[in-house]
Image (cartoon, rainbow over all chains, first blue to last red):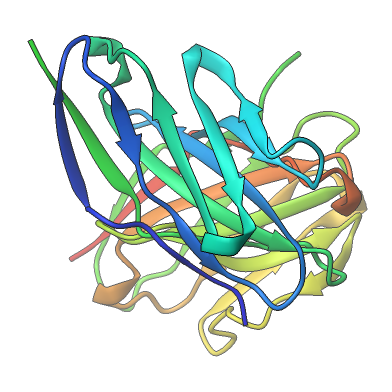
Length: 114
Length: 114
């Protein structure tokens, strides 16, 4: 069965510092992986997705993530944090198993310090 | 392009009352999803429709929750009777089809059961 683990429910970084949000997955078949961002009182917005093409995926707002099969990881990074990056981030996995439903992690709340 | 619309945005009811949520997906999107997001957790899929047929409702508490998607467009999710543990944000999402993988989310309905 699929599962997603996000290490660290809360992460704080200084403005301008590197952002690293961790995501590990469990899947019996090659997965599709996603990162979504959720701002307060809003729905989820897709940041980037991995669908078996390039292992380094670039997304919106300067974010990128690298798929590492050997580590079953899909960590999200951004070289320089901005105050507007403060939000909750969710990693999700989907399998090519018919319904393609998402399994979400529990989320990581990012706080950016001035 | 208009996004996924949901209403109401907020709802407060007493336990044992009933409530209904409405979702209008992005035009042309065949697949519609309802998620439940409890505070501090990631979204959990309740039901997935492909046009007006149910693809997956394995995590829908069918004794109290029901959903329909008439004519393959709008959808309603109903809870009757509500319990305290149903307090959550209910998110609707849509995608062009299951093969496209990317889901677009609405702003959600925040339900408080007292």
